[in-house]
Image (cartoon, rainbow, N blue to C red; front, side):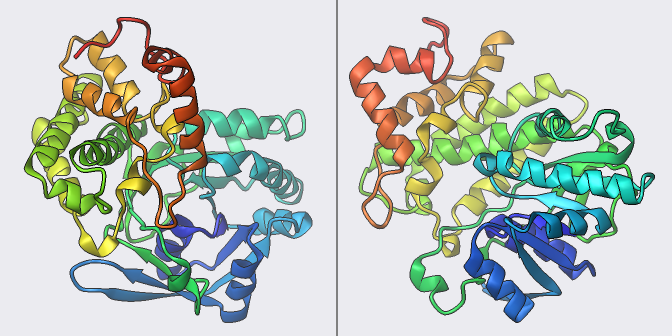
Length: 379
């Protein structure tokens, strides 16, 4: 497997799953210390943060720096499968590398397709990849025949690690015990790999929205309700230990679940989604993860954007005349969210956000950042 992104999800989740099922993992990344360490040791450690810690050693790995374009293309040309886990901001930089590899693969082996697992939390990821890869591939390239764009729903949570955590081992990564990769069964051009932990789904759009509307929404709502209850709290589990925070977070998630059931009536039941909400709230309170309110709630322009976790279900709720007051309250509380990390620093995007809010006011932010029309949302 060629895996773009040797970060936390790449190493603790995608690389770990496929390596344990017998795949060699070739990481492509821009961070030289990690690439050099991968090549030096050929393995790395994942520490599962749960009631009882567990250590997993991931073997059969190596790395290539993202600047080595010809080597990367050759690896893609000969790969059995590919995956991407670089974060949305890093995606434009890897598209030319992927396209070069696909082109070389086509010239060497014109009839062997390649599946690309898109391990990113983004709606319509397959459409984005198709459009952008197409700009870099030669005219006449048989995209539909040779490229499988496999969307995923990434539910695994990984905490922020301090410099002290990685001081002696730059490859060390922490993660929770959850280890299921939901992906689009219909998108594969080759057979679905025999990898323990894969959960192929027929209606992938529904499962991408389940992640956004319940997991991501619940995370954000918990952060904003927690900060409102006590701005001095640090950890998410501290906030969710406050009964009113837990109650309102759950109610926001349940309102979003109603939206999902209207959008995908053949995919989800009320029991399924309520069980999922209960499981998530338990995982959110995992003290061993050490997840902070700042990390979960920061980057406000992205998390409050029209296509993200709060505004999207609100818009569908309005359209289908469903209740959304607890989601809307979380969104309005986000406008007051003003946290710093363990070093006392605000997220750069939050600095920009609060400056815009101060200069233009709440209604301007709701219209121009959240994409809500004047009077569209009521609580």
